Amino acid sequence: MSHRTEWEVRDGIGIMTINNPPENYLFEPEFVPLTQLKQWTGDPSLKGILIHGKGKHFSAGGDLKRLFEIVGSGEDLEEKLAAGHEVIYHLQGTKLPLIAAIQGVCFGGGLEIALACHIRIAAENTLFAAPESCHSLIPGMGGTFRIPGSTGMAKALQMILSGDVLNAEEAFRIHLVDEIIPRKTLFSHSLELMTRMVKNISPRIIRAVVETLENANTMTSEEAAREESRIFCQLAKEEYTRRTSENK
Amino acid sequence: MSNLQLNTIEWKVDGRIGHLIMVNEPSNTMSMEFFREMGVVKDMILKNPRLKAILIYPRGRHFSSGVDLDELLREISRHPEAEKYLQSNYASLSFLETLPIPVISVITGVCLGSALEMALFSHFRFCGETAVMGLPETTFNLIPGIGGIRRFANLAGRVNALDFVLTGRTFDARTALDLGLVDLLIPRKKLIEKALEFALWLPGNYVQEMKQVYLKRYGEGTYGIC
Image 1 (cartoon, rainbow over the protein chains, first blue to last red):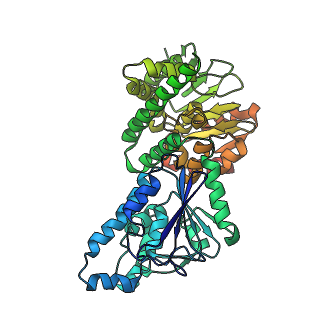
Image 2: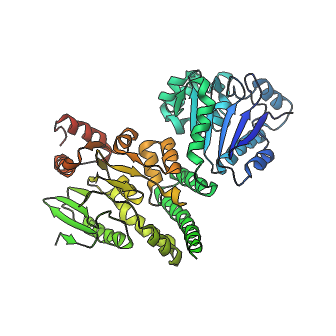
Image 3: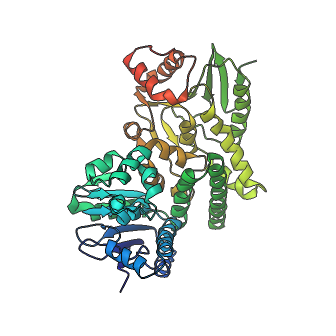
Protein backbone atom coordinates (compact mmCIF):
# COMPACT_ATOMS: atom_id res chain seq x y z
CA MET A 1 0.00 0.00 0.00
CA SER A 2 1.96 2.99 -1.25
CA HIS A 3 -0.88 5.51 -1.06
CA ARG A 4 -2.31 6.34 2.27
CA THR A 5 -5.34 8.51 1.82
CA GLU A 6 -8.85 7.51 2.78
CA TRP A 7 -12.26 8.67 1.67
CA GLU A 8 -15.69 8.65 3.22
CA VAL A 9 -18.92 10.42 2.27
CA ARG A 10 -21.23 11.85 4.93
CA ASP A 11 -24.43 13.61 3.87
CA GLY A 12 -22.99 14.48 0.47
CA ILE A 13 -19.70 15.74 1.88
CA GLY A 14 -16.53 13.89 0.93
CA ILE A 15 -14.08 13.52 3.81
CA MET A 16 -10.52 12.91 2.71
CA THR A 17 -8.15 11.68 5.41
CA ILE A 18 -4.39 11.77 4.92
CA ASN A 19 -3.68 8.56 6.74
CA ASN A 20 -0.03 7.83 7.43
CA PRO A 21 0.30 8.50 11.16
CA PRO A 22 1.83 9.78 13.26
CA GLU A 23 3.17 12.63 11.07
CA ASN A 24 1.14 11.76 7.97
CA TYR A 25 4.14 12.07 5.68
CA LEU A 26 3.16 12.01 2.01
CA PHE A 27 4.61 8.87 0.54
CA GLU A 28 4.30 10.21 -3.00
CA PRO A 29 3.57 13.69 -4.38
CA GLU A 30 0.50 12.01 -5.88
CA PHE A 31 -0.84 11.56 -2.35
CA VAL A 32 -3.93 9.85 -3.68
CA PRO A 33 -3.89 8.01 -7.02
CA LEU A 34 -5.60 10.20 -9.60
CA THR A 35 -7.76 7.35 -10.93
CA GLN A 36 -8.92 6.65 -7.41
CA LEU A 37 -9.64 10.33 -6.76
CA LYS A 38 -11.59 10.60 -10.02
CA GLN A 39 -13.73 7.68 -8.93
CA TRP A 40 -14.39 9.23 -5.52
CA THR A 41 -15.19 12.69 -6.84
CA GLY A 42 -17.17 11.42 -9.83
CA ASP A 43 -20.26 11.14 -7.65
CA PRO A 44 -22.63 13.85 -9.02
CA SER A 45 -24.42 14.23 -5.68
CA LEU A 46 -21.22 15.33 -3.92
CA LYS A 47 -21.51 18.82 -2.38
CA GLY A 48 -18.14 19.57 -0.85
CA ILE A 49 -14.78 18.11 0.20
CA LEU A 50 -13.17 18.30 3.62
CA ILE A 51 -9.48 17.38 3.92
CA HIS A 52 -7.83 16.52 7.22
CA GLY A 53 -5.10 14.36 8.68
CA LYS A 54 -5.42 11.18 10.71
CA GLY A 55 -4.59 11.69 14.37
CA LYS A 56 -2.75 14.69 15.77
CA HIS A 57 -1.19 16.15 12.62
CA PHE A 58 -2.40 17.38 9.25
CA SER A 59 0.75 16.35 7.38
CA ALA A 60 4.48 16.89 7.75
CA GLY A 61 4.77 16.94 3.95
CA GLY A 62 6.98 14.91 1.68
CA ASP A 63 9.20 12.22 3.14
CA LEU A 64 12.73 13.40 2.34
CA LYS A 65 14.26 9.94 2.60
CA ARG A 66 11.73 8.59 0.14
CA LEU A 67 12.26 11.63 -2.12
CA PHE A 68 15.99 11.01 -2.43
CA GLU A 69 15.30 7.31 -2.92
CA ILE A 70 13.19 8.21 -5.92
CA VAL A 71 15.97 10.39 -7.33
CA GLY A 72 18.62 7.76 -6.57
CA SER A 73 16.70 4.92 -8.17
CA GLY A 74 16.48 6.81 -11.46
CA GLU A 75 12.71 7.25 -11.28
CA ASP A 76 11.43 10.43 -12.84
CA LEU A 77 10.81 12.84 -9.94
CA GLU A 78 9.55 15.59 -12.23
CA GLU A 79 6.87 13.27 -13.50
CA LYS A 80 5.91 12.38 -9.94
CA LEU A 81 5.65 16.03 -8.97
CA ALA A 82 3.50 16.65 -12.05
CA ALA A 83 1.23 13.82 -10.88
CA GLY A 84 0.98 15.57 -7.49
CA HIS A 85 0.00 18.81 -9.21
CA GLU A 86 -2.62 16.96 -11.19
CA VAL A 87 -4.24 15.60 -8.05
CA ILE A 88 -4.51 19.14 -6.69
CA TYR A 89 -5.81 20.53 -9.98
CA HIS A 90 -8.37 17.75 -10.10
CA LEU A 91 -9.59 18.61 -6.60
CA GLN A 92 -9.93 22.27 -7.60
CA GLY A 93 -11.49 21.24 -10.89
CA THR A 94 -14.40 19.59 -9.06
CA LYS A 95 -15.61 23.16 -8.40
CA LEU A 96 -16.80 21.99 -5.01
CA PRO A 97 -15.99 23.95 -1.85
CA LEU A 98 -12.73 22.60 -0.37
CA ILE A 99 -12.07 23.00 3.34
CA ALA A 100 -8.82 22.01 5.05
CA ALA A 101 -9.15 21.22 8.77
CA ILE A 102 -5.59 21.59 10.03
CA GLN A 103 -3.89 20.71 13.30
CA GLY A 104 -0.47 19.80 14.60
CA VAL A 105 2.18 19.89 11.91
CA CYS A 106 1.37 21.34 8.49
CA PHE A 107 4.67 21.48 6.61
CA GLY A 108 5.85 21.50 3.02
CA GLY A 109 3.63 19.32 0.86
CA GLY A 110 1.02 19.28 3.63
CA LEU A 111 0.87 23.06 3.54
CA GLU A 112 0.62 22.95 -0.24
CA ILE A 113 -2.41 20.65 -0.07
CA ALA A 114 -4.04 22.95 2.50
CA LEU A 115 -3.35 25.97 0.32
CA ALA A 116 -5.22 24.40 -2.58
CA CYS A 117 -8.40 24.60 -0.47
CA HIS A 118 -10.80 27.55 -0.41
CA ILE A 119 -11.05 27.64 3.36
CA ARG A 120 -8.37 26.77 5.91
CA ILE A 121 -9.43 26.24 9.48
CA ALA A 122 -6.61 25.66 11.95
CA ALA A 123 -6.54 24.37 15.50
CA GLU A 124 -4.73 26.53 18.06
CA ASN A 125 -1.84 24.08 18.21
CA THR A 126 -1.04 24.10 14.49
CA LEU A 127 2.48 24.78 13.21
CA PHE A 128 3.10 25.87 9.64
CA ALA A 129 6.29 25.89 7.60
CA ALA A 130 7.70 25.68 4.11
CA PRO A 131 11.02 24.10 5.16
CA GLU A 132 12.22 22.99 1.73
CA SER A 133 14.99 25.60 1.47
CA CYS A 134 16.61 24.18 4.63
CA HIS A 135 17.19 20.99 2.62
CA SER A 136 18.45 22.89 -0.44
CA LEU A 137 15.12 22.46 -2.19
CA ILE A 138 12.12 24.67 -3.00
CA PRO A 139 8.41 23.98 -2.48
CA GLY A 140 7.53 21.60 -5.29
CA MET A 141 3.76 21.26 -5.26
CA GLY A 142 2.46 24.76 -5.84
CA GLY A 143 3.80 26.44 -2.70
CA THR A 144 5.86 28.93 -4.66
CA PHE A 145 2.72 30.49 -6.14
CA ARG A 146 0.03 29.56 -3.63
CA ILE A 147 1.86 30.89 -0.56
CA PRO A 148 2.23 34.40 -2.03
CA GLY A 149 -1.33 34.07 -3.34
CA SER A 150 -2.51 33.97 0.27
CA THR A 151 0.05 36.03 2.16
CA GLY A 152 1.41 38.46 -0.43
CA MET A 153 4.96 38.46 -1.75
CA ALA A 154 6.74 39.93 1.28
CA LYS A 155 5.59 37.33 3.81
CA ALA A 156 5.89 34.48 1.29
CA LEU A 157 9.54 35.32 0.60
CA GLN A 158 10.35 35.34 4.31
CA MET A 159 8.52 32.10 4.90
CA ILE A 160 10.05 30.20 1.97
CA LEU A 161 13.61 31.55 2.28
CA SER A 162 13.86 31.19 6.07
CA GLY A 163 11.88 27.97 6.45
CA ASP A 164 10.71 29.43 9.78
CA VAL A 165 7.96 27.67 11.68
CA LEU A 166 4.85 29.80 12.31
CA ASN A 167 2.25 29.13 14.95
CA ALA A 168 -1.48 29.38 14.23
CA GLU A 169 -1.72 32.96 15.42
CA GLU A 170 1.11 34.10 13.15
CA ALA A 171 -0.33 32.14 10.25
CA PHE A 172 -3.69 33.82 10.79
CA ARG A 173 -2.06 37.24 10.83
CA ILE A 174 -0.44 36.74 7.43
CA HIS A 175 -3.67 35.29 5.96
CA LEU A 176 -2.34 31.78 5.61
CA VAL A 177 -5.43 30.52 7.48
CA ASP A 178 -8.95 31.88 7.72
CA GLU A 179 -9.96 30.84 11.21
CA ILE A 180 -8.43 29.48 14.42
CA ILE A 181 -10.45 27.31 16.77
CA PRO A 182 -9.83 24.94 19.71
CA ARG A 183 -8.34 21.59 18.70
CA LYS A 184 -11.15 19.53 20.17
CA THR A 185 -13.81 21.09 17.98
CA LEU A 186 -11.70 21.39 14.82
CA PHE A 187 -13.26 18.56 12.87
CA SER A 188 -16.86 19.05 14.00
CA HIS A 189 -16.67 22.80 13.43
CA SER A 190 -15.23 22.37 9.94
CA LEU A 191 -17.84 19.80 9.00
CA GLU A 192 -20.61 22.01 10.40
CA LEU A 193 -19.41 24.99 8.38
CA MET A 194 -19.41 22.92 5.21
CA THR A 195 -22.81 21.43 6.01
CA ARG A 196 -24.34 24.83 6.70
CA MET A 197 -23.03 26.19 3.41
CA VAL A 198 -24.19 23.38 1.15
CA LYS A 199 -27.18 21.73 2.79
CA ASN A 200 -29.98 23.68 1.13
CA ILE A 201 -28.77 23.97 -2.44
CA SER A 202 -28.09 21.57 -5.26
CA PRO A 203 -24.62 20.44 -6.43
CA ARG A 204 -25.33 22.27 -9.70
CA ILE A 205 -25.65 25.66 -7.99
CA ILE A 206 -22.76 24.96 -5.61
CA ARG A 207 -20.45 24.31 -8.55
CA ALA A 208 -21.70 27.43 -10.34
CA VAL A 209 -20.95 29.61 -7.32
CA VAL A 210 -17.48 28.15 -6.76
CA GLU A 211 -16.63 28.45 -10.45
CA THR A 212 -17.73 32.09 -10.52
CA LEU A 213 -15.76 32.85 -7.38
CA GLU A 214 -12.63 31.27 -8.84
CA ASN A 215 -13.02 33.08 -12.14
CA ALA A 216 -12.77 36.34 -10.23
CA ASN A 217 -9.23 35.28 -9.25
CA THR A 218 -8.02 33.82 -12.51
CA MET A 219 -9.63 36.03 -15.17
CA THR A 220 -9.77 39.72 -16.00
CA SER A 221 -12.97 41.28 -14.70
CA GLU A 222 -14.34 41.51 -18.28
CA GLU A 223 -13.79 37.80 -18.89
CA ALA A 224 -15.18 36.92 -15.48
CA ALA A 225 -18.29 39.02 -16.17
CA ARG A 226 -18.84 37.25 -19.51
CA GLU A 227 -18.50 33.85 -17.89
CA GLU A 228 -20.83 34.87 -15.10
CA SER A 229 -23.46 35.93 -17.66
CA ARG A 230 -23.07 32.64 -19.51
CA ILE A 231 -23.52 30.55 -16.36
CA PHE A 232 -26.38 32.74 -15.13
CA CYS A 233 -28.23 32.38 -18.45
CA GLN A 234 -27.96 28.59 -18.38
CA LEU A 235 -29.30 28.47 -14.83
CA ALA A 236 -32.05 30.97 -15.60
CA LYS A 237 -33.23 28.89 -18.58
CA GLU A 238 -33.28 25.74 -16.47
CA GLU A 239 -35.18 27.51 -13.70
CA TYR A 240 -37.67 29.00 -16.18
CA THR A 241 -38.34 25.55 -17.66
CA ARG A 242 -38.80 24.12 -14.18
CA ARG A 243 -41.25 26.85 -13.21
CA THR A 244 -43.30 26.72 -16.39
CA SER A 245 -43.55 22.93 -16.27
CA GLU A 246 -44.68 23.08 -12.64
CA ASN A 247 -47.44 25.51 -13.57
CA LYS A 248 -48.91 23.25 -16.24
CA MET B 1 -30.71 69.81 -19.56
CA SER B 2 -29.13 68.06 -16.66
CA ASN B 3 -32.25 66.77 -14.91
CA LEU B 4 -34.27 63.82 -16.05
CA GLN B 5 -37.52 62.34 -14.81
CA LEU B 6 -37.93 58.72 -15.89
CA ASN B 7 -40.40 56.07 -14.77
CA THR B 8 -38.10 54.25 -12.35
CA ILE B 9 -35.27 56.75 -11.88
CA GLU B 10 -35.03 60.42 -11.24
CA TRP B 11 -31.70 62.00 -12.09
CA LYS B 12 -30.97 65.50 -10.91
CA VAL B 13 -27.84 67.55 -10.61
CA ASP B 14 -27.69 69.97 -7.71
CA GLY B 15 -24.55 72.07 -7.64
CA ARG B 16 -22.02 69.51 -8.80
CA ILE B 17 -23.57 66.55 -7.02
CA GLY B 18 -25.59 64.07 -9.07
CA HIS B 19 -28.58 62.46 -7.36
CA LEU B 20 -29.67 59.11 -8.76
CA ILE B 21 -32.99 58.48 -7.06
CA MET B 22 -34.89 55.23 -7.44
CA VAL B 23 -38.56 56.13 -7.64
CA ASN B 24 -40.28 52.84 -8.47
CA GLU B 25 -41.81 52.55 -5.01
CA PRO B 26 -42.36 50.74 -2.77
CA SER B 27 -39.67 48.14 -3.51
CA ASN B 28 -37.81 49.60 -6.51
CA THR B 29 -37.91 46.30 -8.33
CA MET B 30 -35.19 46.28 -10.95
CA SER B 31 -37.19 45.64 -14.11
CA MET B 32 -36.11 45.70 -17.76
CA GLU B 33 -37.28 49.27 -17.76
CA PHE B 34 -35.02 50.10 -14.82
CA PHE B 35 -31.91 48.72 -16.56
CA ARG B 36 -32.83 50.57 -19.76
CA GLU B 37 -33.23 53.80 -17.82
CA MET B 38 -29.93 53.19 -16.00
CA GLY B 39 -28.37 53.09 -19.47
CA VAL B 40 -29.84 56.53 -20.21
CA VAL B 41 -28.57 57.94 -16.92
CA LYS B 42 -25.17 56.34 -17.52
CA ASP B 43 -24.84 58.33 -20.76
CA MET B 44 -25.75 61.56 -18.98
CA ILE B 45 -23.16 60.87 -16.27
CA LEU B 46 -20.41 60.04 -18.75
CA LYS B 47 -21.16 63.23 -20.72
CA ASN B 48 -21.05 65.52 -17.70
CA PRO B 49 -17.46 66.52 -16.85
CA ARG B 50 -18.60 68.90 -14.12
CA LEU B 51 -19.93 66.27 -11.71
CA LYS B 52 -18.07 66.03 -8.40
CA ALA B 53 -19.88 63.04 -6.88
CA ILE B 54 -22.92 60.81 -7.30
CA LEU B 55 -25.38 59.75 -4.63
CA ILE B 56 -27.64 56.74 -5.17
CA TYR B 57 -30.67 56.40 -2.94
CA PRO B 58 -34.35 55.46 -2.95
CA ARG B 59 -37.18 57.98 -2.66
CA GLY B 60 -39.01 55.70 -0.23
CA ARG B 61 -38.02 53.40 2.61
CA HIS B 62 -36.39 50.60 0.66
CA PHE B 63 -33.28 50.68 -1.46
CA SER B 64 -34.50 47.84 -3.69
CA SER B 65 -35.56 44.23 -3.49
CA GLY B 66 -33.55 43.36 -6.61
CA VAL B 67 -34.59 42.16 -10.05
CA ASP B 68 -38.06 41.24 -11.18
CA LEU B 69 -37.30 37.52 -11.25
CA ASP B 70 -40.29 36.35 -13.30
CA GLU B 71 -39.60 38.93 -15.95
CA LEU B 72 -35.87 38.20 -16.04
CA LEU B 73 -36.31 34.42 -16.34
CA ARG B 74 -38.90 34.87 -19.09
CA GLU B 75 -36.75 37.36 -20.95
CA ILE B 76 -33.61 35.18 -20.80
CA SER B 77 -35.53 32.14 -22.03
CA ARG B 78 -36.98 34.04 -24.96
CA HIS B 79 -34.10 36.26 -25.86
CA PRO B 80 -32.05 34.97 -28.82
CA GLU B 81 -28.95 36.59 -27.36
CA ALA B 82 -29.66 36.19 -23.67
CA GLU B 83 -26.03 36.51 -22.58
CA LYS B 84 -25.63 39.83 -24.37
CA TYR B 85 -28.85 41.02 -22.82
CA LEU B 86 -27.55 40.14 -19.37
CA GLN B 87 -24.21 41.79 -20.11
CA SER B 88 -25.96 45.00 -21.06
CA ASN B 89 -27.68 44.94 -17.66
CA TYR B 90 -24.26 44.37 -16.12
CA ALA B 91 -22.73 47.27 -18.05
CA SER B 92 -25.54 49.62 -17.01
CA LEU B 93 -24.36 49.21 -13.38
CA SER B 94 -20.68 48.22 -13.50
CA PHE B 95 -19.56 51.56 -15.02
CA LEU B 96 -20.10 53.05 -11.54
CA GLU B 97 -17.08 51.16 -10.24
CA THR B 98 -14.63 52.76 -12.68
CA LEU B 99 -15.91 56.35 -12.55
CA PRO B 100 -13.21 58.84 -11.56
CA ILE B 101 -15.64 60.60 -9.19
CA PRO B 102 -16.94 59.12 -5.91
CA VAL B 103 -20.17 57.15 -6.04
CA ILE B 104 -21.98 56.81 -2.71
CA SER B 105 -24.86 54.39 -2.21
CA VAL B 106 -27.27 55.05 0.62
CA ILE B 107 -28.62 51.70 1.75
CA THR B 108 -31.87 51.76 3.62
CA GLY B 109 -34.59 49.18 4.22
CA VAL B 110 -34.27 46.18 1.96
CA CYS B 111 -31.29 45.80 -0.36
CA LEU B 112 -31.22 42.37 -1.97
CA GLY B 113 -29.70 40.55 -4.91
CA SER B 114 -28.88 42.79 -7.86
CA ALA B 115 -29.64 45.84 -5.74
CA LEU B 116 -26.82 44.88 -3.39
CA GLU B 117 -24.67 44.18 -6.44
CA MET B 118 -25.35 47.73 -7.63
CA ALA B 119 -24.44 49.11 -4.21
CA LEU B 120 -21.25 47.02 -4.26
CA PHE B 121 -20.21 48.74 -7.50
CA SER B 122 -20.32 52.05 -5.63
CA HIS B 123 -17.19 53.39 -3.99
CA PHE B 124 -18.84 54.10 -0.63
CA ARG B 125 -21.82 52.57 1.13
CA PHE B 126 -23.60 54.49 3.88
CA CYS B 127 -26.02 52.18 5.58
CA GLY B 128 -29.14 52.75 7.66
CA GLU B 129 -29.07 51.03 11.03
CA THR B 130 -32.14 48.96 10.22
CA ALA B 131 -31.20 47.91 6.68
CA VAL B 132 -31.34 44.27 5.59
CA MET B 133 -29.04 42.95 2.89
CA GLY B 134 -28.31 39.68 1.13
CA LEU B 135 -27.54 37.79 -2.06
CA PRO B 136 -30.37 35.21 -2.00
CA GLU B 137 -30.00 34.04 -5.63
CA THR B 138 -28.88 30.49 -4.82
CA THR B 139 -32.15 29.89 -2.98
CA PHE B 140 -33.87 30.40 -6.37
CA ASN B 141 -31.44 28.01 -8.11
CA LEU B 142 -29.48 30.94 -9.55
CA ILE B 143 -26.25 32.75 -8.76
CA PRO B 144 -25.61 36.47 -8.30
CA GLY B 145 -25.29 37.57 -11.93
CA ILE B 146 -23.98 41.12 -11.81
CA GLY B 147 -20.52 40.83 -10.31
CA GLY B 148 -21.77 40.33 -6.76
CA ILE B 149 -19.64 37.32 -5.92
CA ARG B 150 -16.42 39.05 -6.97
CA ARG B 151 -17.19 42.30 -5.16
CA PHE B 152 -18.37 40.47 -2.03
CA ALA B 153 -15.16 38.42 -1.98
CA ASN B 154 -13.00 41.52 -2.50
CA LEU B 155 -14.61 43.32 0.41
CA ALA B 156 -15.45 40.54 2.87
CA GLY B 157 -13.01 37.78 1.85
CA ARG B 158 -13.46 34.53 -0.01
CA VAL B 159 -14.67 32.56 2.99
CA ASN B 160 -17.51 34.95 3.78
CA ALA B 161 -18.39 35.22 0.10
CA LEU B 162 -18.73 31.44 -0.18
CA ASP B 163 -20.67 31.22 3.05
CA PHE B 164 -23.15 34.03 2.40
CA VAL B 165 -23.65 33.28 -1.30
CA LEU B 166 -24.10 29.53 -0.85
CA THR B 167 -26.55 29.93 2.03
CA GLY B 168 -28.21 32.99 0.48
CA ARG B 169 -29.04 34.21 3.97
CA THR B 170 -29.80 37.84 4.68
CA PHE B 171 -27.87 39.91 7.21
CA ASP B 172 -28.32 43.14 9.11
CA ALA B 173 -26.45 46.44 9.00
CA ARG B 174 -24.15 45.59 11.91
CA THR B 175 -23.04 42.36 10.22
CA ALA B 176 -22.49 44.21 6.95
CA LEU B 177 -20.22 46.66 8.77
CA ASP B 178 -18.27 43.86 10.45
CA LEU B 179 -17.87 42.12 7.10
CA GLY B 180 -16.53 45.30 5.53
CA LEU B 181 -19.39 45.50 3.05
CA VAL B 182 -20.57 48.92 4.22
CA ASP B 183 -18.53 51.86 5.48
CA LEU B 184 -20.72 53.67 7.98
CA LEU B 185 -23.88 53.03 9.97
CA ILE B 186 -26.14 56.04 10.27
CA PRO B 187 -29.66 56.54 11.70
CA ARG B 188 -32.08 56.20 8.81
CA LYS B 189 -33.44 59.75 8.97
CA LYS B 190 -29.97 61.32 8.66
CA LEU B 191 -28.67 59.07 5.90
CA ILE B 192 -29.08 61.26 2.84
CA GLU B 193 -28.04 64.39 4.69
CA LYS B 194 -24.82 62.71 5.87
CA ALA B 195 -24.06 61.20 2.48
CA LEU B 196 -24.48 64.61 0.86
CA GLU B 197 -22.28 66.23 3.50
CA PHE B 198 -19.61 63.61 2.83
CA ALA B 199 -19.86 64.05 -0.95
CA LEU B 200 -19.35 67.81 -0.57
CA TRP B 201 -16.54 67.28 1.93
CA LEU B 202 -14.52 64.92 -0.31
CA PRO B 203 -11.61 66.63 -2.06
CA GLY B 204 -11.80 67.60 -5.73
CA ASN B 205 -8.77 65.48 -6.57
CA TYR B 206 -10.48 62.31 -5.31
CA VAL B 207 -8.78 58.96 -5.91
CA GLN B 208 -10.62 55.75 -5.10
CA GLU B 209 -7.52 54.02 -3.70
CA MET B 210 -7.51 56.48 -0.80
CA LYS B 211 -11.00 55.51 0.31
CA GLN B 212 -9.98 54.39 3.81
CA VAL B 213 -8.00 57.58 4.40
CA TYR B 214 -11.00 59.73 3.46
CA LEU B 215 -13.28 57.76 5.76
CA LYS B 216 -10.84 58.09 8.64
CA ARG B 217 -10.34 61.83 8.17
CA TYR B 218 -14.07 62.35 7.77
CA GLY B 219 -14.70 60.38 10.97
CA GLU B 220 -12.18 62.53 12.84
CA GLY B 221 -13.83 65.68 11.54
CA THR B 222 -10.58 66.89 10.03
CA TYR B 223 -10.31 68.19 6.53
CA GLY B 224 -6.82 67.13 5.66
CA ILE B 225 -6.55 66.38 2.03
CA CYS B 226 -6.90 68.79 -0.83
